[in-house]
Image 1 (tube, rainbow, N blue to C red):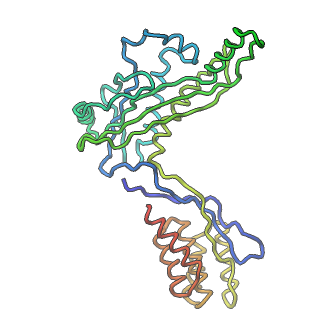
Image 2: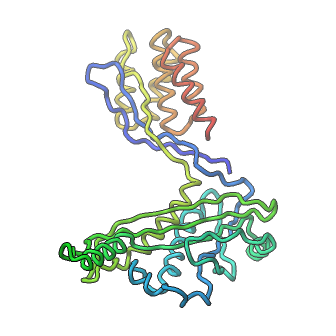
Image 3: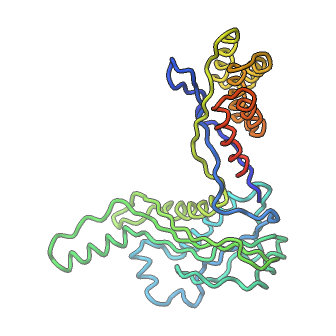
Length: 337
């Protein structure tokens, strides 16, 4: 998937100082996502494979562990669906992608934090064919606990048994922990497109005398885990500053200021009309400054190619050094879009 970035204005025309010849805009600048979806994938089938085998439900110390860690019987099964819901909300409709759920949307996995082996490719193809999907995304593992409850209970028991100090008060806050593991399968080429493990922590105020997590704790943390996976395919952002000129000397002094005032109130189209007129009629430094401001205005409006044209003109035709640096920055942005 070729990612198309959109520029968001964070703050417009913040003046460096009242007497400076420069003003600037501060913009959110895109960075490449951590993972890229192949162009041919338009429909993704999603399956939850994090469930416990039925014959393991009553084995070992599962009930004891659930009490100590604050888990509720069956809660991971429900919470893992919240994880899937976050993936649906994040991917469905994004850049033409649609999410499909097969008739059998739940598969048996390890039911623990151990990651199962990849699915058989015949099974992957069968699931994708049933939904006419181009790829299969599987929640391979999902497990949760509330770490602070576990440590709090353990410390309390140890202190009481040792008799060294009185039993401490139970913690008033609980940190929910959700661990999940995802795989995305390409049935045609029989390769794993992406695999990623997430670990999410959210802190909640405890409820009741037993200090159990509030009802919303686990589903909210599970949803955050699903959102974290989706974020791998989304562009990130950092802030950049674009300098522009507030004024020029000579016959176009007042007209140039008018254009800058228009930019201060986000009337960039109006500012472009003013600066374009100056660029076409003047020469030398004034024309170079007008071209530089036009480049900034077009980038703010999301017209990066047009912005590059004016930044290059500012330097190539009029020797404006800001134009040279700005042109290189715009080339970099275009290359990652």
